[in-house]
Length: 396
Image: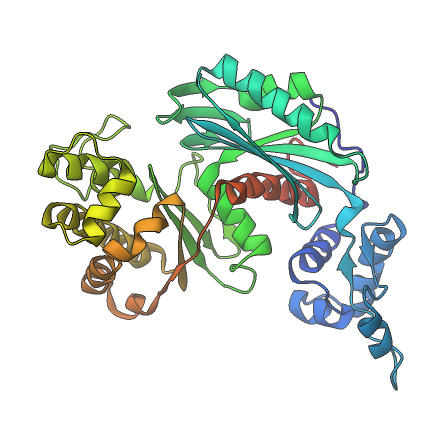
């Protein structure tokens, strides 16, 4: 079993977890503001934060000369609370069929180190060995950083996060791979495994656009179409660990077979691979790559434009279906597929407007560029969340 984190957090009560979460995601923040947002008394906030300050996880000292000068004014100093970023370190790993991406972050998910490695063999044994080597390389870079609390791994597909098992990843060709167990044995540190889009959603919830949002969704467009949901104060995992599978809604022609083996999935029309396949088919250009298809579409080629328009229509309909069901106030559109966003945006927004019911049509659609480094950062963010909450395998 993975060993316990080197720095257990002094959080004995749910109030302590709530207070640290507020400081981490919304700091610098005064005690009085934490009390207002949580409903706790100021005395309860002070009691919860005292051991965190003593242990070096939180500080109420000004971090800049300007803050220090502001605290010397008339009246009692506010002394906002801030997480000590270098109090711990985290490693995040993103797995794709062609590459491994690794980052080290601090306690606020700020990226410190980045490593990219090409992947030629996607067999589970080979990938686990490569992940182990990459993680060890990143661990060796932590010489002056805070103690390592865990390693996060983000993989596409159906992931049982509680047990660290990738149940089904069509892109990787994996079924029932116990990633956390296999990697944990090699590294001797806690390993958290999660669906990659859900990891990205956790990062946006704790450290991005979702910090002040009551509800939002992250939709990723690339080789696959993914969706992470933040509703009613929590990133949705679903009873079976599967939720937000926007790419597998049956909204495309039924004759088209998806990588998951089913027919009519959104991905069969709207993924980057599907757009390229359609453009090759209609133009007769089997030599085209995605960049070539994008160039043709920008040049006005009717066949390439048709492929992107068809994708936009299906994506917009899928977004409307999701928004009608769960009602988020914001949808963040991200992923490697946003490079060609301008080619299908108009058709996507029109389809969304056509199918969004009533006030759901007021949901904002926001474009947010992400690199694979951000996906790896999302894996690190899931470790930070588990660490603060005391979730397996980082129980306090």
